[in-house]
Amino acid sequence: MVETSNPDPEVVKHAEEAFDASWQLSLLLALIAAGVASVLVSAFLARRIAGTLNKVRSAAIQVAQGDYSARVPEGAMGAEFTEMISAFNRMASELDETEHTRKRLLSDLAHEMRTPVATVDGYLEAMLDGVAAADSETLTMLREQTDRLKRLAEDVSLVSSAEEHRLSMEPQAVSVAELVSLAHGQARSFYAARDVDLQIEEEAEDAIVVGDRDRLSQVLTNLLDNALRHTQPGDQVTLRTGSDSATVLLSVEDTGHGVAPEHLPHLFERFYRVDTARDRAHGGSGIGLTIVRSIVEAHGGNVRAESRGPGHGALFTVELPRHD
Image (cartoon, rainbow, N blue to C red; front, side, top):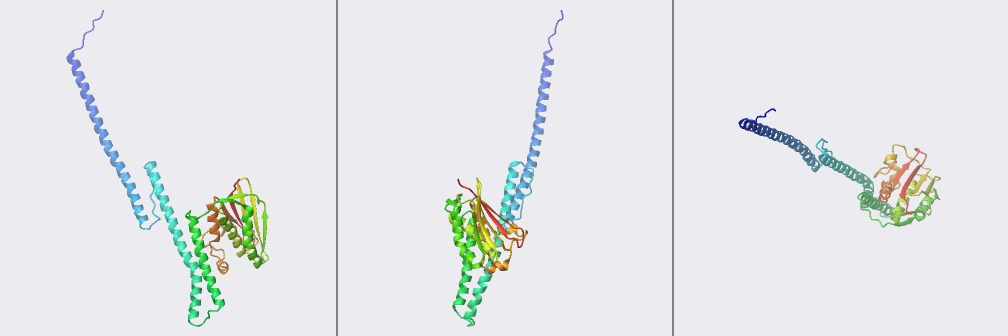
């Protein structure tokens, strides 16, 4: 039988004390290392965060001073910073687009108003100098120019309200046949005076759409007016309707002047004209098609233009949600 000797208490005590000292030293060193690491990481992150915020601050100052081209470069600071930077850049981009549109609108308005104002001023000066008399012909000319300015103001107000989602509407169920009848009634006398044949082809007379009857009627009226301005005596304009289970189609097709491919993407822009001289001669404000697009989009639809080129006419198609 082997006898086991008990360990020396002094040895055990010294071993425990050595272990405790080693453990405490290791813990202290770990805490020091962790503290140093946390300070370094915090300083690094604080510097990166401060750098990103300074970039945002600098860009915000530029935007506040009117430089809407300012952008904040994207970094790898986490999802929250990425979303903030992306939101700021979207805001700056929208402000830049709005400012560009505002400048172009003011420039276009000044250009559009120049001709009628100059005409009125010229006639009034001639009357004051005794060169022209205030006869019926002169007064009629002055009235036409003031009416043109009035239409321009009304059209610009309508487009601005639509684009800012402030367009007043009274939604109701409207039949396609009623819209066609209203548009045809307003346009036929003008077409007859110009000797342009206006045809109606209804394939969706029973279809119903929900919207403002007067606004939707204005869509067809503007499209018919646009077609009339770009046709000659003997040409034909066809107003068609069609539908499927979800969509109502309203189209105006003419056999007139047609549109070159490079003009098609710009037809619905404000004051854009394919033939400036001819449209001004006929008194168009240059935003009739813009009004069409604004009203159609306000009703949840869309509009497109097609043409095979000059001399081949044009086709404008409106798509609206069908109401069962």
